[in-house]
Length: 408
Ligand code: CS2
Ligand code: MG
Image 1 (cartoon, protein in one colour):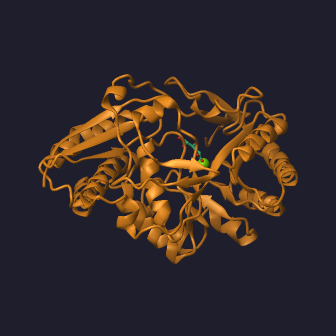
Image 2 (cartoon, rainbow, N blue to C red; image 1 turned 90 degrees about the vertical axis):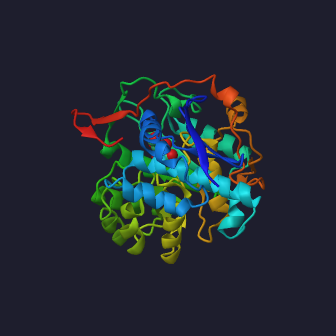
């Protein structure tokens, strides 16, 4: 069996999805996602200029050897751009493998460990009242777990993942258009004083059963993070996410010695070498990598297995920048993983997105049910894809009130 061709498509409704389609001499094709939010053209170029010319003629069934060929062959290892490009190839090769076996991918991993996989949604508000309305809406939709963020009184511009206008809770996350970033102003003291009180009120309003998550988005120092974790302990969070900048694997030691709050980290990691110490030293409870830019199924499965040895559960990244293809790859891992924790899931299900990526995967009552179709179980409509083109975007940049640059 041989790979005969591969194409890359960039574009989509709201997000610039980078979709790889690999064709074979047996008429079976495989699909993968290389979307790297706000840097989409780079993994696309890596695929087109370096990887695809080598891929043609290879046997698509040898997904492990192909992964090693590209990873070792690059010489300069890791990095989100390369790992997103390798990841898309890997996903597409697993898709082909599943189609050849006529089995959904979770069967090739070891079958189902559960039916529905728990997901969490994002509630947000310009202020606490706005946030409460947003949470109520998700609770009514049947969500059992919700990430909560809200504006901080006195903070000069909206904080992380918070709308600037009250009631604008659906639009905050796609508002990154244009090549020049918008600037957010951050004030750690105001956040540290206000957010524990806000989270306490959310717990009081919604009772003990709701799983509440909160994302600090890398903004605290290790000492501040420990203080914050202690302050929110009575809230009984499902997790506290990215309390410290994720590039320092030692930063969580201090927090861990001072608090029992469950910690989640890893959405910016792109290899096992970014999180092996965190996992082996049991400094975290949830690992947040994404199949999209952590080298695909082959590499992420390795991380999941390491995590299982150390009581660390999965909580894969699922921001809207992941196309339905990588969300499907994660759904298959979620159905199988003995150490599954939760899946971040923002409803992508606009009619445009469903038309571009038809599938039978479904969300019901806060649980995600994986499709039984062979492979990833997602199709790709090239005619629909022709409607979209690349639109540049950027993440906000964060400064302190005195102008000092901070972490987004
Ligand atoms: C966030 C992300 O989903 C999350 O937890 O931290 O939305 C993050 O800001 C984006 O993925 C950045 O591209
Ligand atoms: Mg996050």
